[in-house]
Every structure is written in structure tokens, then in C-alpha cells.
Length: 491
Image (cartoon, rainbow, N blue to C red; front, side, top):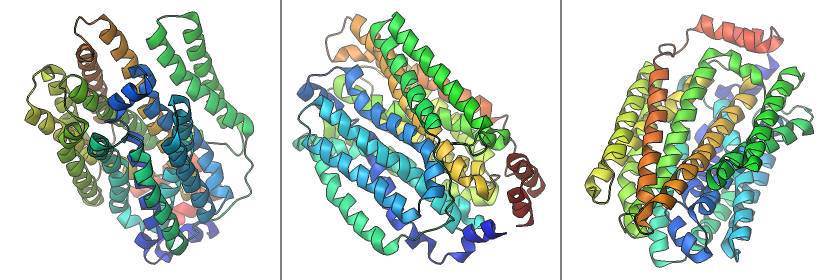
């Protein structure tokens, strides 16, 4: 029972104060995930780059975060909460500074890469700490906080950047974030506590190599296929990435102390919510990248106007994320998730059908608001539902696994959709930049299909929250009959 006592939520007073600096740091990290979206057209002009190069400023951040996250399972057990926070927040801060002073595209990419390293460690640390310090009966509400950070911050990113870039250089996006990040580091010295036990785990370097090279090769290969056509090199890189990812997965199944524990997918609920999360983040990142691009390139809106168009949806998403967390505590997850996915699919379908050179702005605002409310009603319940059956000993793996999959899904969205848009724009008879409209229409049809697939799949999910006896069986299966499963059953 020592493990259970070490992470028992009831032993922590004022859990909100403990995670306050983590909330702020992750809000900034998620904000910077999409803050460049509205600024991309201006950056393309200033840096002399094309759409498929510009989207890497967003995709590289997501990709790096996803690559780093698998190591979080090891790091969360090896290092204290405070040490890991200061290292990850420090890396994020350094990345901001590099991007702010960058003299060109290459240095800016390096800055985004360093930011992504910090962000990739911050979110699993945040989510794992919440699961450790909040009482089990309040996990839904706590996940509502996670949903606000993971949903509201990325939604506000394009809004704030549009307002800032209207009158200032895009570099101001990084300069303005720097002092807030520094102040939050100071807050963490007072508020953040060490939670959970440390273990003498060893870092499996081969697993880190396979996962890093595999996931990055898959995304680079997809981007190269879309940009260069069916070239032998592009397809070879893509195939090599798929093979490396497969080797990574097989290695985790054989290791006595896996880098990332794949036994989590023996839990049916965790697997089901993973598929829903893939569809959710693919759609969310896609809309947040390409709707501002449409507003500025096709409609000729200023960055500020483009950002303000997204503001109502961003604010409503924050509210819906908080409310859905509380509703989950009372009613469970599946009804909320199904209804929200159907609503999201309907909004994306209307986007695909109606988006054009003269679509009413108010209609765009309304459809985006419906889309973001749907996101809010999925994100918190799906996270809480996934974690409900995870034994305490595997939380340090479950949280990074879910975040890695979401980050990779978001990065995949940017790469795949940019690869779709580029040839449409190249063959369009419309002048630049309006030539992106046919590609943007194709993008929304793809997003509609992804959300629709998620909605159909949601009807195969178990209803409501798992009963106690089913939870115990899942834990025993995940723990392979080891002591942790027995301890959790007693708890």
C-alpha cells in the first residue's frame, strides 16, 4: 500500500495552489502551439517562404512535443516534480528567446524546436500531478481545468496573434510571452510541491531513438510526398518511419521496464478514447490552422479581423470545457462525447459546403463557435474517462501516452492538410493568394470525414463510467497480476 499512500489525492491540501504554476506554464505552451496561425501569412511574406514551409513552424512544435512526451514516463519517475518543471519551463523560455531574436527561417525553426521540447514535458507533468493531488471524486472537474488549458489556450492563440500582428512584428508574439513565463517561474518557487515517488528507472536510449526517428520520418515523409509528388525518396522516408515506429512498439512489449507501457491498450476504454482523441485533435488543429489562412488569403481580412472572428468560439470553448468536466462527474462521458462529435461533424460539413469567396462572416463565426463548443464537450470527458481505469502505477505512462498521441495527431493534421492544399493551389486558375480556396475546401471535406468517423466510432464505446468490478479486472490485466493491481483493488 506504500504506492497508493504516496499518491493518495486526499493527503494534499490546496491542490489548486500546488498546480497553479503548472496551469500557467501549460497555458503558455498551448498558446504558442497555435499563436503563429494567424501570423503565418505575414511571416510567409517577411521570410519569403511558401505554405508548406510555413506550416512547419506549427508542425515542428507539435512534432517535437510528441517526440519528447514518451520520455516523460521515465522522467516523471526519475526526477522530482520541481526539478522536471524547472527544466521543461526553462527550455520553453529559451526557445521563446531564440525565436524572438531569430534572423531568418532556420533559426526560427530552431527556436520552435526548443519550445516544443519544453512543452512536450510540461503537459504530462501537469496532467499527472493533477491526477495525484485531486480527490478521485473531483477528477472530472480537474480534467475540466486540463480541458481549458488544452483547448482554450490553442483557440485563443490565433485571436491574440491577430490582434498583435496587426500593428507589430510577428516577433512581438515571442517577446510578449517572455515576461509572463519568467513571472510564472518565480511563482513556481513558492507554490509547486513534489508529489509522487521517484524510482531508479533506466532510460532506454534505443527506444528514444526509434520513437524520435520513426515519428519524425513519418511526418517528414508525408510532407515530402505532398510537396514533391510520388518520389522514391519521399516514399522511402515514409516507409522507414513506419518500420521504426513498429520496432519501437514491439520493443516496448518486450522490455521489463518499458519506455512507454503499451499494455495500456489492453484496456478497452483507454484504446477507445485514444481513437476519439486522434479524431478530435486532427480536426481541431486543422481548423485552427486553415480557417485563419482562409480569412486572410481568400477574404482579405487583416490579422486582427481574422483573430476576432475566432474569439467567440475560443471563449465558448473554455466555458464548455469547464462545464463538461462537471457534467462528467455526474453523468459519465459517452453521451457527452457522442453528441459533441455529431455536432462537430455537422459544423465541419457546413464549412465544407458553404465556405467560399463571399461567405457571410457571421456564419463563419457561428460555425466556428459550434465547432469549438463541441471540442470543449469532448476534451475533458474523454480524458477523465480514459484515466478512470488506469492503475496508479501506470499513470506516469498513461498521461504521456495520451498526450503524445494527441500531439502526433495534431502534427499529422498540419502536414497532411498542407500536402492536400498545396497542389490544389498550384493548379487553381485564381490569382495568389485567392488560389488557396479550392485547397481549403478540400481540407474541410477531409476534416468532416475524420470527425464523422469519430462520431460513428463513439457509438461502440461502453456506456457511462466503468463499474468498479470492471475497473478492477482492467487493473489486474494491466498489472499482469502484480502487487499494484491488488493494492488498487483494496483501495
